[in-house]
Length: 473
Image (cartoon, rainbow, N blue to C red; front, side, top):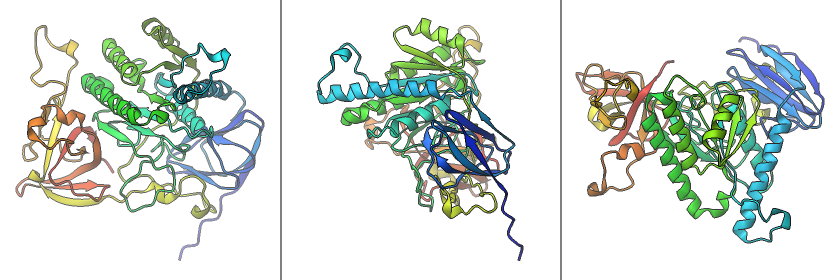
């Protein structure tokens, strides 16, 4: 029997007040960090004392302390250093301003007395749109502000909206999603930077298992089909409105919207970009726009959306996003027991996909729009599209060039209204995601396909939509 690997030597770091320990990991490596003395946090989530926290999968993160602390680091990061220059004070001020907005909104709802010095202040909760270029730290700021809100001790459960299809939020890349957050979002891997969603996998999630609502866009770039993306943004907005109609106190916690870098600048049409920003502003009733690391965009927003509060923020440590269909699994450094870990446990990080053979006719498969969609500006003058951007085109798996092999498909929830007379042509666009599958084999002579799914439910009789994502081991 092979002997166990020798424990990796640990190193202690003593951090002064308002400094942070930053690190980056290479592929296939992991890091364990334990708080020995004082208080510390990772992107707004507080660390418990004497509990190792595991980081892996090329994670880039920072351990910050307000009053000073000592941490023990086990593992070999590719980069590690302590920085005294952090924007945390500015982010704390943002949190305080948003917290005041929440308190005023709750006080107004309950009819509580209003101090004289606050009689003229608005009573809307914070509804924040975060904009910025690639690697500016938008997702990190969203996560940090959400974590501070749920740590405030007021019972807030703010909504976090992901409109970046390249990231996917709590679903697979290609999805836009929203979830109420009840406890701090953990950081352990860039595979799930916004925390873990509850699944039907045979594991018990001990962490903050979120229940998101997700819609399928199907592409990594917003410019691929901006009309479809705008519709999904508005669908999520309508669901948020419906939720707030029955949860008035929940409304006072507000929401934060993360956006793709293409909203700040990109190779797509400027008109499309502006329409998508405006769609977010309208759908989510935005009253604060936070621009991260992009002075030109800040000026542009001040000019085009002069009625909104627009703040700027400097860049911050970012978390890149990678995903696998089987979840993620990071082994702790030698000498660190998985049973002693703080935050997420290793069992939270792994899914157990199952392979199933189904008939071609068991599943209705569609593509939204044409497989390749040129921008409207590229069409000849007076020309019309053969297939519109939001048209659901059925796919026959038996036809050559179907594009199904190794494709990621979103399985949609059943229609709410089963009455055929109440159905409409574009209903598929308004159905949320209930799961994902991958087509791993096509047996055309026998009209059968093999699918891989992390969920255990049957897909017979269901509707699925293909995008431009493919599965690779």
